[in-house]
Image 1: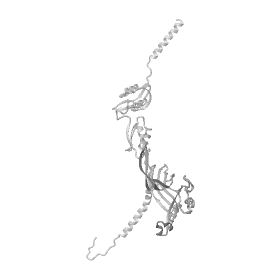
Image 2 (image 1 turned 135 degrees about the vertical axis):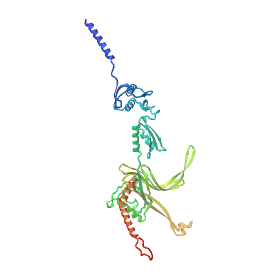
Image 3 (image 1 turned 30 degrees about the vertical axis):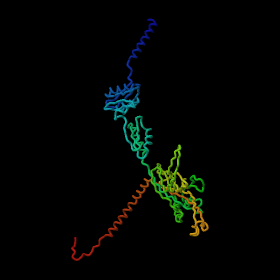
Image 4 (image 1 turned 180 degrees about the vertical axis):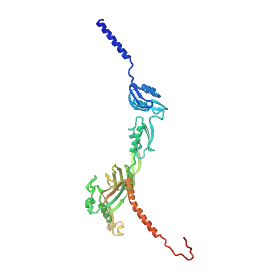
Length: 452
């Protein structure tokens, strides 16, 4: 055989061997082990989802229905999972949903899931919102729900209807429980006093001396007023010298109590105490040649507004606005003279604060003269005179803030500590009463029979 013929024969043998090798069956792209009530292990590589379910259904004697529009190539690797987990995991890998219906599984698109069966993947719960805004909570929960989740808000009933997968629903319930907590209540006890100043206190009482005298401690500062003569002074009240000074001024008739309100409010909610007059005045508005008239009111008097919150350490963050004002209506225009201050501060539970330096000048006129003659027209100016008196007053505010729940706990603890003393006192009184009411033997009357 020549060399050329041998070369041709080798080529023919190689082609034949390649054809036989190509005709041999390839390895299966799906491998399933386990099953029959035991955990399953499944490996599928670039396999149509319908073929995966077909092999799984034949092996496990399971009914699987493939819905319209369900198609695609998947690759999954599952180890030691239950049959239910395997069916649902394969569907999720392709972006579909597996629903359980009367012992069979139906594979559906996400848009069709839950429409024909109440036994789908999602669960419906109603959540009651007690203390927060239901709409605001629903906006927060929308960021934590699954692709199947849906939240419906009923603002009037403060209720949320949530539908989602079980794991997502449990997380939503935890979030609502964390956000919608019972708020703390803050108790404010205030004293609003007006002090009449004399010539020595023309710029207000120097309260710093009271805080620094006799080892007193406190803080002092200007709170954004326009001039030194009308600066608002803020103190932390930690010395009894202030109480002593106020008592001394009261004994001299220089202190007038404007109001002593006590107010309980929820945290983060504004509360207001208003002891004032409402003076009405007309307001005319013209829009597009249409004139309307309304009545508005000017509030003047003693006003205390505050808003508080409690931090994790039990301290009270307080926004407070005391105001003392007088108002008048002149020619339909409102006029108001006011002394007010607005401040934000952080307090310990039960701590007092002191706000002072709110000065006000009042000009009063009085007529004095010869009785009777000073009241006769045309000549009364000959027998009388008009005196103008300027009175300067300073408004001070003493405020104590409590966390209401802890205040009740303190009172209860105090009662429990005093209970043994009370019981001992009652027992002693009971013994004394029994001794007082002992019946002394009396002398038997003639003819009275003896009783055993």
